[in-house]
Length: 66
Image 1 (cartoon, one colour):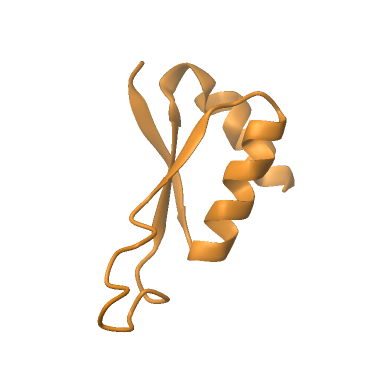
Image 2 (cartoon, helix red, strand yellow):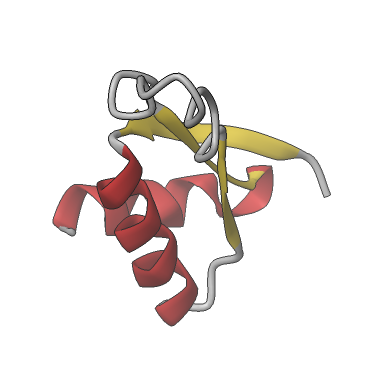
């Protein structure tokens, strides 16, 4: 399993997208969601949504329609 980046999103949208992907049977992870929470800049740092490279095409279809 090799993870690839689907895209970068604001923290809330990234978590919603992960849930949507998983509801379609696509494993997904949100990376960097806790970055810089201590200094208050967490809204400024995009969250990377990662999927298996074999699921990337299907994940893009879900992300485009979400």
